[in-house]
Image (cartoon, rainbow, N blue to C red; front, side, top):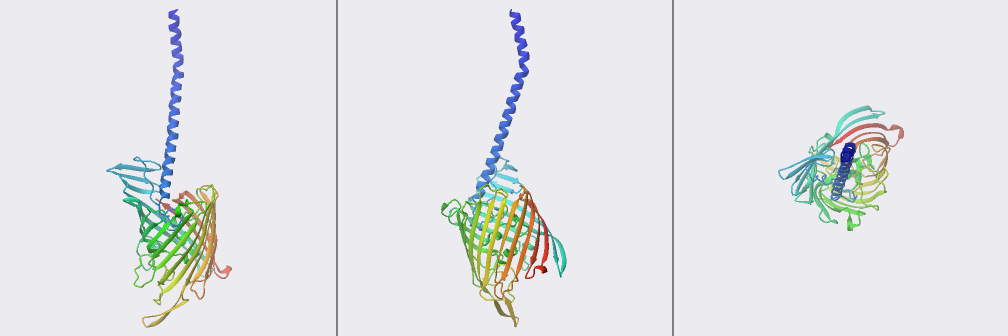
Length: 459
């Protein structure tokens, strides 16, 4: 009997061994799946933390280079580092009391162990082909590096004291009569929710499409209306908030005082540029300084803004940029603007109306003993553009714009109509864009055909 029991027990052990092994294997696979799920959740939490820290950056009532309530803040805080030597879509290395993190679309970030110093480096370029067909002047085709930029940003001592520098190296990144690469250089103090302060050379917080980084446009370039009537970069100071009174980002403002003659300029004449802007985002703050609804916003997003500016005693034809008056005379100019930006479920709409009016239509001066006459550039205009994501990576876009002179202005009547297709390989960081525009003045039949293809890479 005892021998029978021993034999039966041995048979049972032999038969049950594989089953037990299978159970152990299943348990290990279950543990591995659970670890993978927890890792994915951790990556998502890291991404949410990074975005949350980005949203804490100072911005205008409505990024330089990334998309929120004021067109004042065109540059976000650099991405937050991972808690370990590597993480979330990038590669990092810790050592010597510092952390280095790199990721596509995030650049390279250096962080001190105590986070009192953070420096992020990013670079981008736009390679463009343009074909222009004119009825009388014939056709022209060009290849160019439209933009080549290097940006440095971060904070010093505290995240509330951030800095931003940007340099441009292509021909059109500098001004024809002043080939200096410096585009932005400013400090921002954001400890006070309702009173952020920014000092240095920066984009004037006037119209959103100009404040929106050229990296985040949904057509190859900005509207002809904005190109004529915007207020470009200048040196000065502004105070702003993207969440005035703590209403959840519903209300924002920007007030600024600038030199009035544009970037990299020293003026020996009196006169300043004063700017005021207010913006309402009734459904809460969103990435209104990024064109295209790449996130397919599940809820409607809307930003409505208005701005006014007065530039006194300026010598520049377009107030803060463009050429200078040959007569060497100065003039006061009034600027007005209103704008709208809407996003919902892959659809986006942006529209602006702008006006610039000089105190005098004609300027007369004496240069080298000869009388020189200039006509000023008073004008108004508007544009509207709309886009829709056909897929998560492909978008179709269309735009209409019109620019009209005021009085005896040197500005000519101009109109634009056209559209384009975008392929967002990796959002705005890596994209291929193509568009076509018909540009004409008084007679529809006398217009120009313009076709462009552009590749952008943002490291």
